[in-house]
Every structure is written in C-alpha cells, then in structure tokens.
Image (cartoon, rainbow, N blue to C red; front, side, top):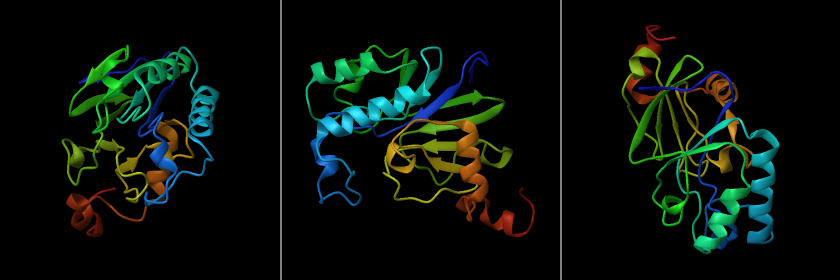
Length: 193
C-alpha cells in the first residue's frame, strides 16, 4: 500500500476525455455543456489549474484523452499542474503514451490523509477493506451512479468539471443516502457507522 506525502494536497479526477468531440453530442446520456471541443478542453484545463498547484499530486482515474491526436494530448498534459498519476481507463490510447509520474493497470490501494482508498476506473460493488472503512473512488460512469457512504464518482461530470480533494469527497459521502450493497444490511442494523 502506498502512502501519499502530507507536504502537498492530493486531488482526484477522471474522464476528462480531452480532445473527444463526442462528449458534447446528444447521443451521450449527459452531453457536456460546451459549444466546442476547444471550449471543453480549455475549461477543463483552467478548472484543473485553478485548484491544483505545481507542488500538488493528482490521481487521474482513467480516460484522460480520447479522439484528437497524440500531439494534442501531449500539449494538454504539459499545461496541467501537479504530479500526475494515471490509473488506466477503457479509453487510454493517448493517455498511456504520456509522461505520468506513475501509471497503473486495474486498481491502486493508497493511503491519503490517513484514509485507505481503493482507486479504480470502474465502480465496484465490493472492494478490499470495505468493512474496515476503506473508501472507493472511481470514474467511468459520467455521474450516472449516485455516491454511497463509502464510494464516489470523481469524474469531471460528477465534480463540476474539476479535480476534487478528499475532504470534498468525504463531504459528499456523508450526505449520501445509501450504503454500498455489501454493508447495507449491517448499516441498517446499526453495526456500521
């Protein structure tokens, strides 16, 4: 299990889909509210850099760039602040070719601010450590799944098109109505808090 340093802030995001013109099309269940891919990309870059400082760390949980060209993906990547870490998504053709501080397949088990996190591009119904308070952060669903008391979508569609800190994610989880399925019965019986 990796431990993140406390000398910087750690952020999470997913599903930026830089260069992907299809993200604004009505065929998407939630088309993004931008008039062009240029506006989309510039807004996401500005929102990223408004919160992430060069000294901060950011975990991107997949689907960094899709469509467009590798040159465009590289140009966007260079403009983004922070030490960038990638957890591969299902649309990672260009993302894998970029100079991330680290890249990971599947999932990552990491401790941030004293909390154990299970990071994966995909939403899980159960994950390691769920009974001991491990939180699950994911992307892929483009805000189509509600948060639970222990899991949250950190993709841009669920986070006002910007990266988020763990305290923001914890706040969302605290307001969530449901528990993950594996814990629901025990939570109803008052055995989980």
